Image (cartoon, rainbow, N blue to C red; front, side):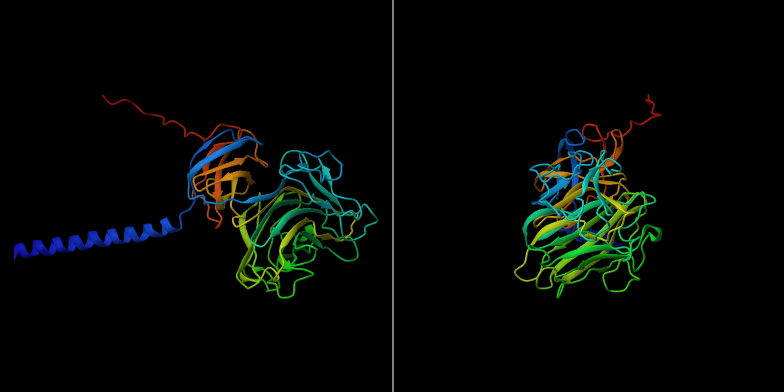
Amino acid sequence: MKCLMKNLLKKKTCQFVFLVMFFMLASFIPRTIFAVPSISSINGTVSNGQPVTISGSAFGSTGPIIAIFDDFEKGTNNNELSTLANSAAVNQWYRLENQGKNPVYSTYYANSGTKSAMIDWGTDNASEGGRWFEADIGSITSQVYVQYWFFVPIGGHVPGANSGGGPNWKLMLISGRPWPRSDYTQVILTDVNNWPMGAWGFICLTPWYDGSGLTEMTSAIGGYHDEGYCSLNPSAGTWHRMEVFMSASSTGSGTMYTAEMNANQTRRIVGSSSNATTLHSGDSWNLVRFPAYGRGDSTSKTYYDDIYIATGSAAQARVEIGNNPTYSTCTKLAITTPTFWSNTSITTTIRTGSFKNGDIAYLYVIDANGMVNTQGYPIIVGGEGWLAPNPPTGLRLLE
């Protein structure tokens, strides 16, 4: 009997060990298949405009194709935005609208550095329409990722708030050529005194003039009707970051999302759609415009900074600097501009955004599927490589 019990116990122990090993293996398999980026080291100085090399794993084999990045630091205060070659931090703007006064470089407000792009909505007898600047992104039938910051000063207004038509500020536009082929836009329809915006204040991404048959983005938060309206949480006097991602499809297999973030709001998806028709058959996206439209208003001046546009099959892959050790808790982020990308190594030019030298920050790699490293890689802005942990204190030698 004792021998039989011993054999039974041994058998149950073996079964338990087998089950533990099975579940451990089962939990390991998804991590292998859906691996998230992991940073192991950084080489270089984390200073604005300087290249660094990031080593690690699961970055993805392909990175973004950067159409333009502009922090507007190359311009001269009060001069019109330039379209000359390499007049932006990366590449250049394609053209300006030339309806009314064109956007200018301004030192009044800036998210990074000392300058931004300013649009004065009341400089030509408050006529409606233009004052936009536009990027040529090629002929895109894959993906587009757009990131930008906007700002309305305290005491300022959304264009149209103090004119007959009411607030109407189309923040940006993605379109084919010639406009308006397969065009999408974002719209603010309420003045700053009603911010944050509820169900009727912000259209997160909607087809515009050529919208028949195209999918309208719906709220990702809930509680809003299905006509493209989403909540948004900006405030006057605070820079507000927006993201737009779109994958092209004329057959209902596209995806898109809009995200926001500011100093008082962690990054969140405010609108998204899947199984979407985002492009008419035979079309491509060629142009991205800031802003798309605004109603004339002598009381309105609006600002843009740190505009980043990427395309290709890995358009949303990127490297960012954040102010907290997990990406989802960051209330400050600065995007960098990669020049080389492989599964284990990225070379990118640091763009410090609103970070200052000496700030403790964290580095994040986001892959083509939107996956990000679980823990930020600690750095000191303006410093070399990684942030070393503090040495332990209170230790004594045991004899």
